[in-house]
Amino acid sequence: MGCDRNCGLIAGAVIGAVLAVFGGILMPVGDLLIQKTIKKQVVLEEGTIAFKNWVKTGTEVYRQFWIFDVQNPQEVMMNSSNIQVKQRGPYTYRVRFLAKENVTQDAEDNTVSFLQPNGAIFEPSLSVGTEADNFTVLNLAVAYNNTADGVYKVFNGKDNISKVAIIDTYKGKRNLSYWESHCDMINGTDAASFPPFVEKSQVLQFFSSDICRSIYAVFESDVNLKGIPVYRFVLPSKAFASPVENPDNYCFCTEKIISKNCTSYGVLDISKCKEGRPVYISLPHFLYASPDVSEPIDGLNPNEEEHRTYLDIEPITGFTLQFAKRLQVNLLVKPSEKIQVLKNLKRNYIVPILWLNETGTIGDEKANMFRSQVTGKINLLGLIEMILLSVGVVMFVAFMISYCACRSKTIK
Image (cartoon, rainbow, N blue to C red; front, side, top):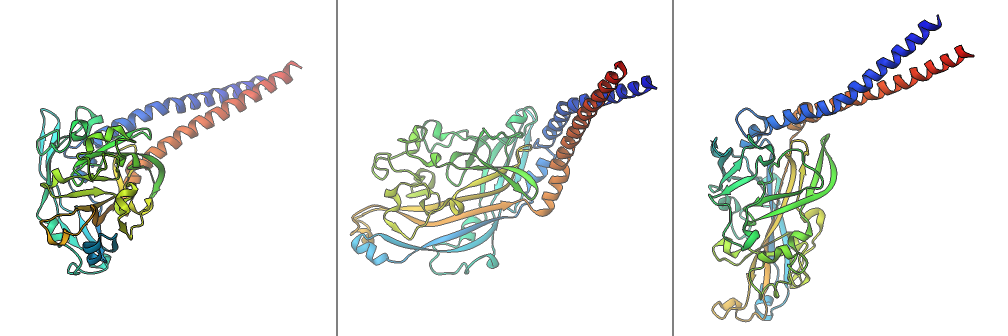
């Protein structure tokens, strides 16, 4: 009888040990299976999940505009007073609804090239007025429609998944010809996706043709997006700092007068990118800009919640599931003897014209599909691993304790 009991206890302990070992083995094996599946599905080629969503996004993307209406133009022209502005908006357009065009795979260098057509549909229900409002300086849909961005050539990831979606060339070049040194490089992806298995310690680089440069984002926080765990990456203030604070930005300072010998920060002169027009780019309401930039403008209220740019990245796939891209377009206005309205000016102004907020969030249907096909399966595998390991350890310890207790009684 004692022997049967002891044998049963030993058998239970062995079973527990086997379950624990199996659970432990399943962890690295399961991870390898997940990596293999993800690596296959994020390649940019016909038949993968990534390719289907890459050619034409299923996410509704909206671009909102706020126009800065100058309240005191006569005072400014006659007395060089501070410019008083009042933002009007939003004026909302649906954008990025057109599929990529001229998609061409290159088997030799494992790249895929494409053209991104632009389109804009005005959304009256999401706007405060009409496109005919008299303080707007242009019809934004007309300015955007029938244009295209590219040609882009990006790595498809077939030979090296760590390079998937990274831009190889833009308009046939690896450099922009606007800046000096490393500032002129085209780095990273277009921010719609990144190579898979994103780490919080990474600096995510991406190129934006809107601001005529490459830029980067750093991890800020974990976010739960419709039941999907994502990493929120944000553009740090350091990216807009002067070369005094961030020496890497020295090549973005292209002149000495307006920039006060490269000590001003938070604005970027992109005139070389805009055929010589005096256009400056910044974050909305001069967020992260130096006081000398914003001091001549009254009516601005910068805050990070409304005016910073962020990307919510699903770390396993590298897909951007939610984003908010915010930027402001400004014009340099300075004294000029040749222009009547500028003759009496006594100082330079970087005048805000408009700011935009382009946002997109994965839809409910896509989120459900993503949870079931990606995060759900991964979570289920992790749960099975933990159950096997936990139950196995508990069984092994419990049966071994019981066996030792029985042995002790038998000896006595």
